[in-house]
Image 1 (tube, rainbow, N blue to C red):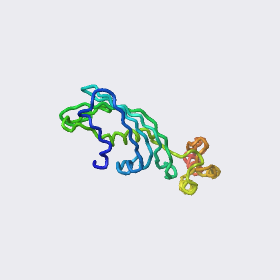
Image 2 (cartoon, rainbow, N blue to C red; image 1 turned 135 degrees about the vertical axis):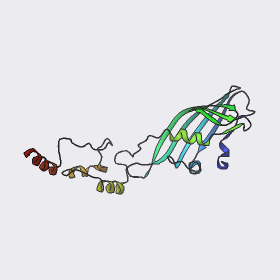
Image 3 (cartoon, helix red, strand yellow; image 1 turned 180 degrees about the vertical axis):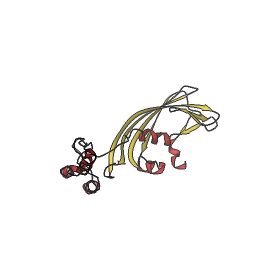
Image 4 (cartoon, rainbow, N blue to C red; image 1 turned 90 degrees about the horizontal axis):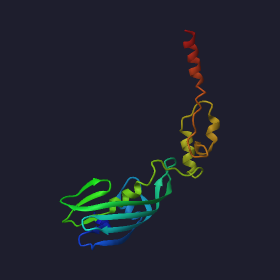
Length: 193
């Protein structure tokens, strides 16, 4: 973790009370952390640490912009992140995570590296589905997607809508009332028997 020594927070010897820190997470941070969700970004982190003697309360205010690939056209798109997170750190014999927001670190280490926590806080703000606003996707890729998307017979007029999606960005719903004419012919055979 030599790349992330800037994100080591020394807790041993930290005076009682409140202490403020700031971090800037840029493209190099996201490249070095090598996470799958975010590869680029510019994120500001304001950290407040309250030393209460036996426990450290860490409060994070995170805001900025990250770039994630659009699920539809695969071009990078900017996604605004803004979140507030907290973490409690205690000293113990060995490192462990008691739950989502309580971490135990060995007292002889006396510090915690926040790099992975910061990345996770940012990554968890990104929704599972991320697509450009309607009409903003890469036109060439949208054309290829439309070309290779399966459609029912008789739906050629739907292929003319931009990106193959309705204006609100949702995929077009299939009409349950129409059926494939080939199945209609097969149904006639079974109805006659």
